[in-house]
Length: 185
Image (cartoon, rainbow, N blue to C red; front, side, top):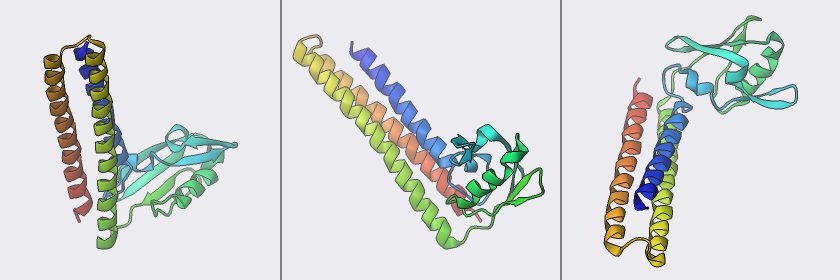
């Protein structure tokens, strides 16, 4: 019984780490990355549609993104959504393709982005700790109901703590890598 709880906790913690990784992809660094535009939604015929479902996004150069809409009539809406986003990008259009030059980050902007990365990482760690808390509660309930002995509970709690430590360490590793990427000139 406790094995199923631990397996479920591991699965949920893996999802929390993956969510942090996905969020980090949307944080701008000095280089062009197609994941940068993942958060952008475009008002397309009255519906908020993710940009990646409406266009092909590519990074042909280190400091340039291109966005080629599948439907050319959506070009203005895509351009407006990118301009209004918090990314600070200024798209230029040639009628078929939007070009997004990625400006060099200032030192102050880099520091702000590192703070954002740390906030996102802390949210991920909180999610991991919440999974641990829920699993601990479930273990205590099983002991209270007499389905699991106290020794088995202690072993499961130790394994759960190891899982928690491993997942928070993975988040810390992601933070270090993203911080290095952002601060790289």
